[in-house]
Length: 489
Ligand code: TXE
Image (spheres, helix red, strand yellow):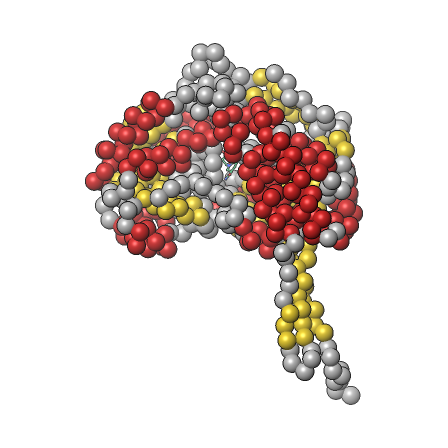
């Protein structure tokens, strides 16, 4: 199976190779086969991409917002028209089931482009009366060249979530996908060009953390938006601080999903499944600490096991019936298996799963079993560290006060969920949870209209919603004098 792109990079409206860059490959996680061979961008190609973007940005910012909207909307249509082709590519690159990529990846990218296209022309300033005919007004202006750095779990979605608000505001973007999943961002660049985006406004360069660091500290970078781990977030924030770049960080989590004993058990079980096993558990906002009030604990565990055993279909992610694919890479496979072993060593009760999964036709695939540990204690590493695989930790609780304190006792604060039929309690609990996104009686839904981002170590700034427009633009205040200018002499 091959998914070789025309070339590794896309700069100034054309595919570019970089023969002097280090070589790397993309592999299909279900088989370990190489599907594409690429190169990292050299320092000079990164410079060229930044310079090209800086030039193109001036004209793009001067383009009427309604025209910018039309181009972004056309790109959304093209994403939808090519959804199957893009989804198959995303499945090859990430190993996520086609069943998921058909609805959650390019489709979410298209939603984001449509949404920010519709907001592009609504960005207005204020008029401020200062008396005596004097006034001030504000303009909301683009920042310049924004750098996007992506993670490997939702490659095209992440590229769109960053590009859509950036371009809507009149910025240019240089995007670096994760070196684990380099392919779909190049297709997005092609689509933007076909939709009429001027050359140089959206560019893709490949590379690992070294290229990421060069981009984050580049003299022409106005802002950097990263999706990745907390460790990388700290490095990017340090670079951004040193060079005074604006920064948005979407980082990891160890989010709580709290289930009170008056909850609708079937819905709570469905949410716990989605919050831990969708995308084989590789989602930053996953509710991996499932706090269950003791009254319904055994009933909930039983239904969780019954539904998982009856419903999970592991296999080739290109088969649309398959609902659990492999992990993204051999490194992630080792990491997740290590945490499964650790859970046992730490004394958690293994309810089901707990190891490597075998798919007879795909012996080299990075498969693991969806896994549930019960009787997990707060101090266990499996309850404290982000695993980024299908490993659910179930923890018992007795009272509301206790569970809120324990849910908050983490450095992370990306997301949280509450299941209860008592809505007064739901709102009270949500108010006290230290998390950027909370769900009541559902989990992991992230519509583009809703700002998304983390409290505490889970991030800085917000993606999506009106908040994203604010973070990709800056205010200029203009004071207009209507009287004479007084001076001391
Ligand atoms: O992420 P990294 P990795 C977590 C998850 C996973 C772990 C490692 O737990 O197991 O992180 O994944 C770029 N300056 N998440 O190694 O390293 C890098 O090239 C600038 C959670 O893939 O954080 C890539 O494009 N950029 C997460 C991006 O940062 C740098 C999603 C993310 O890579 C850089 C993915 C540097 N110094 C992994 N170093 C989530 N929360 O969604 C690396 N990069």
